[in-house]
Image (cartoon, rainbow, N blue to C red):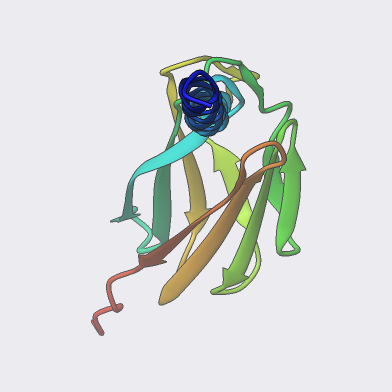
Length: 148
């Protein structure tokens, strides 16, 4: 009987070790996948007013993944949603899209930022989706037009 107790204790310790290692593996794989996939970060958003008094929302989008993100040809006028390569941009409030990327790159490489410009009066909310990593939402508020 004395020889069986240490064997059972060793088996229980091994099962606990395997369970903890399995949980750690699931965590690490989930974290690593988020970093290696096509992934974006909205690093800044602001409004600029041009000489004609038009408010332009500027949204700086950076590729924080390890894979390139295709942007295709993306200059859009009308409607509320456009798909640009791997990215879908929707304007959920503030009117239709009059949008395009500054410099119009075809591919957003790792670490590279791009600026999305759109006409915005009042408060405009954008939803930017990369199919493999989900959606990012940003709200941009244009300064009120001053009479004059």
